[in-house]
Length: 115
Image (cartoon, rainbow, N blue to C red; front, side):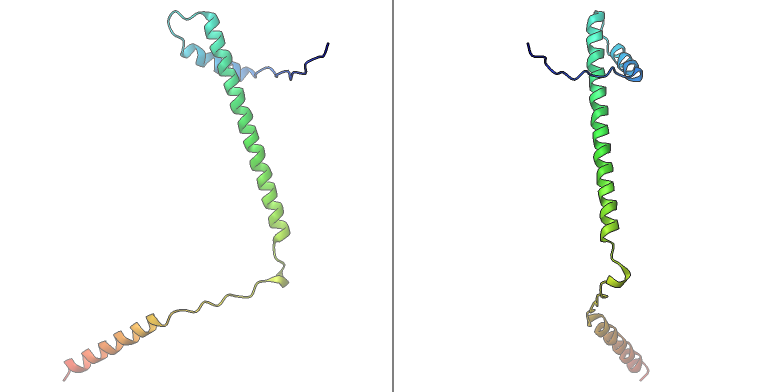
């Protein structure tokens, strides 16, 4: 006869049990039996444990990503001798032409108003 390998679930923490009991009693309906309340409490405990498991997995994944990013930043950081050449940005001559035209217009205005 073959044995079935089942993972034995660890017992929920006392905090989880207390929180599940409090929630189950808070949502209890009139006429609800203790057995029904206990089943609801167990469902809530399983939900809390599943949520905690997901949060731990997310934290592990975030930590792993952060470590990889830090390792990538340490290995890819350019050395002072390998600096990229500065980029040259060519600006448009339009603002300078507009400035020249406005000063020319201002000068003509002053010259014609003094005649």
